[in-house]
Image (cartoon, rainbow, N blue to C red; front, top):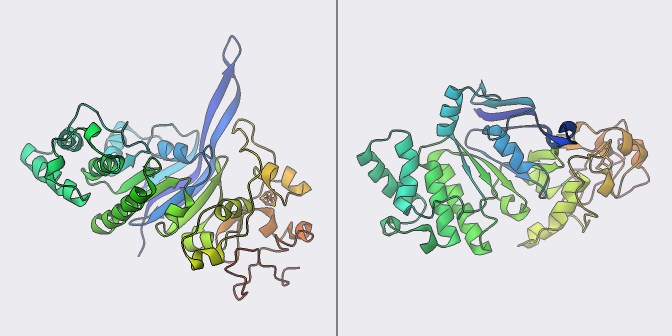
Length: 362
Ligand code: SF4
């Protein structure tokens, strides 16, 4: 039976904006604004979206680098939203982060061996055990003892990220928060790091929250995918569903822009639906649907009513009025979007990425 390791419920992280001589709070940057998801032990969840959508802030708030301004974070059944010192200590052992830049994550004056050893030393692992474990870890990340005395400047980007991953798993955590761990690497190296992460997950029963703006990376890697826009999740569900039949106009625009590597992927890629304009400032979130300023299907309702999640006939949960039976009529004249939330499973178009229009909800 699956067991939830991490549950995030209505998480908020607002940063105050201060101005004037007295530095009064005049507004808030809503970096994370009501985000909910959960990850089962041993599974991978991908958080995707453009830069500025709040993905990294979610991860930093989970581990306590930012203090949550609302909502709850549950880790292994315990409320760790505002962790005590004791909880923080335990979380440092059980949750590790791997960051985007493999170079700045390593101390340039430390050898590879010392870099991997330090987290174990801090946690009181005896010296002989540490030495044995360092060799094991190098082996796990597909390097060897020849690297023990090398310095970061002697390593490639991919090798540095392998060392960062070895450091992260050295104290046997349960959860890795992977914040764009491959985006600074060459494409060929990215694939190897993803392969390594998959192997480690199988061997060590690790759970991953994988944050990226590179959608092609998570297509075959993540069990669940959540699409973030301007501090909020707009669509979430099984990765295959989200990639094969994206419902939300934002997901569709993102997915229509990624390169495909096979005929099968080409067959379900949405038609080209380019994203117009820039993502608005999280200090000035649009009223109603926050995606409306870039959405080709906007109606008057979209301007005034914030969409709640709609269950799309057992598919992903989507924040879009197109799929809400209360507003479906407004979209009758937008045939590409469809009149209802119903997506025809039997349609031959089911994999084409077009919204499949069914008549039963009209
Ligand atoms: S609610 Fe309206 S503006 Fe928002 S994504 Fe759906 S159609 Fe577009």
